Amino acid sequence: QVQLVESGGDLVQAGGSLRLSCAASGSMFRIDTMGWYRQAPGKQRDLVATITSGGSTDYADSVKGRFTISRDNAKNTIYLQMNSLKPEDTAVYYCNALRSTWPPRNYWGQGTQVTVSS
Image (cartoon, rainbow, N blue to C red; front, side):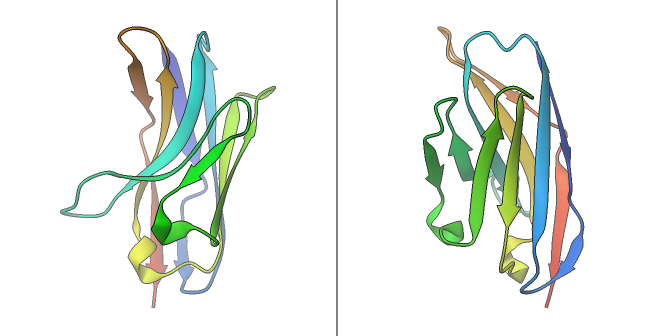
């Protein structure tokens, strides 16, 4: 099992910045890709950004150039630096860890609320 604990969500004005953190604990065996997803009310959960243990990253087009994902493998922690926030970034942000076994298994955190006011 992997436990994921997110923190850093808050209410911020448009144009502001926030930094989310996700600390993982438990068995990190074959945990390679970790990432952030978000879900706005009434919408599906969408990918925000992912990062592999080697540091390769991927971003949703809507956040490219504004958000940066990073990872501290020694601390089993990932971060999401969010700049130039927009009201449409308002959502619950979830941390994800993928165990690359067969079948693959996803782990999710409890989520942290990010609200961007206009």
